Image (tube, rainbow, N blue to C red; front, side, top):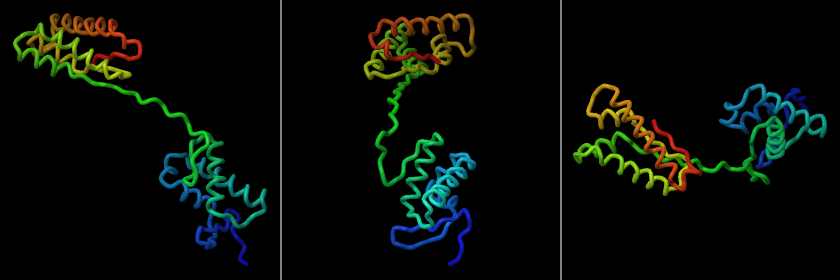
Amino acid sequence: MIQLKTDCLIFQTNDGEQVPCSAEWVTLELMGEGAQLVDPEVVRHASAAVLHYFKHELQRQFVSVAEFAAALEKVLRNFGLSVYADHETPANPPPKKPEQRVVDCNLHEMATSAVSEGFELLFFPHLREELQRQLKQAPHMVRFRGLRPCVKQLAGTPRWNRRCQSLNDQIVEFLRSCWQTESASHSCALVVL
């Protein structure tokens, strides 16, 4: 019988075939594209740990791919990575983060429609209605975008001036006060950009 290299094991595939391979090569094959996301040094140490376990602690030269994958999974978890072998589901899967729902509103579009209707004064009631409508969806964040173009549209000026700054502050303060009066404001953030 030919002696194996020190970093090799004989792997038994599902169809009974026995293939001598480097433990590091099999590790890279099992990890697939995920191996690119992990430091190569970690991959080397993980494969060396599994190789040592089978060759020296269990005194085995023949290992099934499933056994190797399960041992590799355990080593990678001990290195702090969250990995699971394809053949099993984890007994204690990591807790899923709650979905962060963010709703967006375009202030510039609202200003355009308010000005096209002929009245700048319609903007503020529409703004309150839009905030209330978005809060009914129970989001984690309501984000109003386009404040600067909105202000210029309402002020009817292409350049920023004192009136723009004053109107900007009024819109932000109005949104803040509307948001604070709503009951959903305790579970949701308001962002104005």
